[in-house]
Image (cartoon, rainbow, N blue to C red; front, side, top):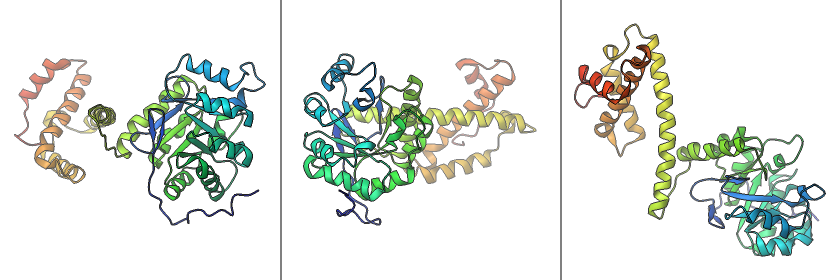
Length: 340
């Protein structure tokens, strides 16, 4: 039976955005999430990959093993329809793997569990992928999440997620979409920038892969995902993400400023260009109109002078290192009041 005959959104349609709660996590609103092994926001178990191996066991045993060390959300991909009752009893969500999207008996059984469902795309068109999601939604309600590139969690070579297709599915369906990265986080930042609501790693990825995925979510997400926190803790978490991105940009700016100091015929405070600094502040005010030039000017003055102090410190072998040295040097060559 093919699902392509079922009605789906037209390519030009843009569905209203929805969010899906997975335990304490919300997919589709707020920050993107990382799903994988230890250290991620949520864990998942691939029973299909475990069966026949040294870690084989029932779904209940696999869940108990993870629950003994993890209190967060847990997703499970079944090996067969017989796993579904145990998954319903102990999991927070279920994964319809790419290999199962044509098994309508399993898809229908999954959709009747009352759990959120993640539908991975197999070697199918976007129309058939969205049709499977609609088929699940008929019983599961609208707690459906899409995943592009889920095959990267399997042994052997697998195609990278199609980020253009991910974005199309997100806009056409209105559902949250994950990028399946397996053990390779190389596309994590690009996936978040493309609009992925989360990153699905393999069930047991290397720790460095999880760390790289979390860094992409934290840094790139702060620049590309607009958040509307509803509580003080959530707002503070959002600020922490923005501050992390700001720190990365400030470090990069300091590196580039140091390069300029090495290339300029007259470097340091003596080589400052007040007119360029004024233009810089005016240009930044276009991107931060609520702050405006008056508020941005002292901020950028501090940023510029911090970079100059660092460049002189490195040139002089630490002569101006530390807070006291920076303050003394700043007083010896002040910029005009209010000037960047």
